[in-house]
Length: 307
Image (cartoon, rainbow, N blue to C red; front, side, top):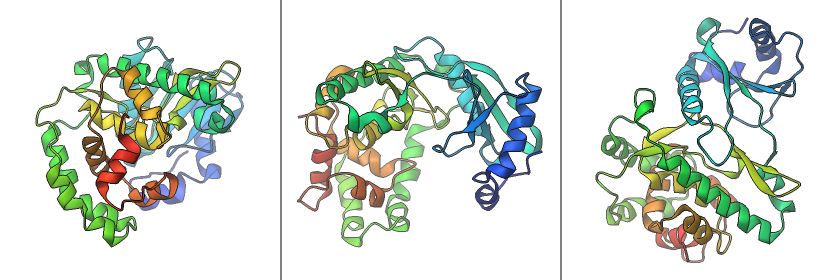
């Protein structure tokens, strides 16, 4: 029903095309006892995700990303009922045809925080940031050991070394101006990252787009999307917080870190931003306020400082 997708080129040809993917989703729903339930594909997200009626969500992972489905299923099972925010409950997970995998999960209530944010009063925004900080602290307090067989990287130090080796070319390939690229090696040389940090379960994309909010009360209701989860230094998760939750808005990073219970070195967070798997500073500079000082230190202060 679904074609093989084992390369990035095949992914580009198949995954965005709902006329190709929907018949497979309908067939899979029938196999899972949900035949005839209305399917509504979500517009956001990298993988095909469908609301199935009012109670379920079906997420599909093509063969090239099949391990993401294994990872997300195990993480959601590990998290069930253990955070102050709801996470999707797994109803079924497994292999489909031609290398595809799936997770059938519960549908959470609430509105995408990124969509709701412009309508939220300032005082409620501040409270939401506090709730988010408490939620991330709770996630990081969980023992990640039961997930070690499913989540990488196995060697955190080696992972950082690989990311650092590719840091300059990663930003150049994404169109970052050379005046910024030229400063990357020297900046990274001056930032000391912990050699053996405490390892925690990382969401890696803790952002407004993955948080749900009740529009009646402006309180957080859920946390989504654990397919890119990892095990590593807690500071790595603060990258997405600064870029996609607090976004350089005055006072919000300080509020988040106070709720989290720890203050992070802004230069370390910026270093992790440059080493992050999904790092794209060309895009960040379009989306966030860029400080007058054209240095990485000025960016660290503007986006990640808790003062």
